[in-house]
Amino acid sequence: MFEAEMVGFWVKKVVSELLLLPCGPLLAIAVGLWIARRHRRAGHALASTGLFVLVVFSLPVVANAIASRSERDYPPLDADATLPADTAIVVLGGGLQAGATDYGGETANAVTLVRLRAAARLAVRTRLPILVSGGRPPLLKTTEAEQMADVLERDFHTPVRWIEKDSLDTADNARLSAPLLKAAGVRTAILVTDVEHMQRARALFEAAGLGVVPAPTDYYANAPLGLLSFLPNANALRRSAWSVHEWAGLAWRRLR
Image (cartoon, rainbow, N blue to C red; front, top):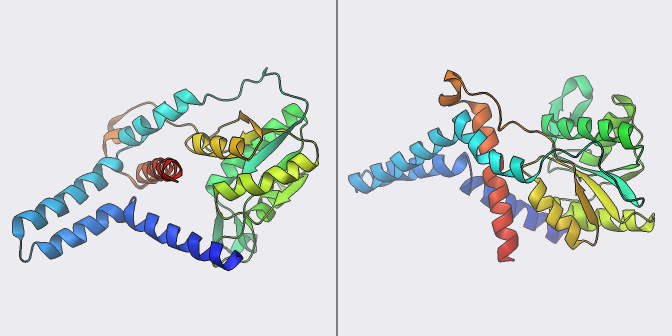
C-alpha cells in the first residue's frame, strides 16, 4: 500500500510541476517555438501566451492581489479568542531544506520556519500542546515532523507532544493526525499553516472529524506598493506559484 501511495504521490507531483508555475508557461513557450517551425502564427501565439503568463505572475502587485482574498477570509487568530478545552496546536510541514551542511544536511525550510515561529508564539500564549505533521520528502533522509520538532525544541524552546511523520500531503496530514489527537481526548485543532493554504487544510481536517480554529500565518498582500512592485521578480513568482498550487488543490478535491 505504501509503495502504491508513493507512486501516486510522484505522479501527482510530476504532473502538477509540469502544468503549474513556472513549468507550465515555460513548456508552452518551448512547444510554441517548436510548432512555429511549421505553423508560425500558431506557434508564436502559444509562445507569447506562455511568456505573458510567466511575466504577469512574476509581478509583486499581481502576487499580492491574488493573495488578498485568502487574507481577508482568514485573518490572524484573535489573541483574546476563547478556545475549547479539548484543543491542541497542529503545525503542518512546508518542506525541508536539503544540502544544509550547517545543520547536518537537512533542516526545516523557510516556509516551515515561518509556521514554526507562529506555533511557538501561540504555544507560549495558550500553553497548549503541539502536534507536528509531515513525512519524508522524496530523496531525503529525515521527515519534516522530526525536523520541525527539533527546531521547536532546540531553537524556540517549545516542547512537542506528538510527531506525525508518515504523511505525504495535506490530506495525509489530516487523516493521520486526527487519530493521534482523538486518542488523547483532543477534538479541536488550532491549525497553523500559511494563510493561502488554510482553506484546503481546514476542509481536510474537518473532514477527518476535528474542529478547526484557523491560525494562519505568512501574510504579505498588504505590503506597500512601489516602483519595484511592477517589475518581475523571483519571490513574486514563488508566491504566485503557491497560490496557483492551492487553487489546483481545491479544484482537485472538488473533482474527487
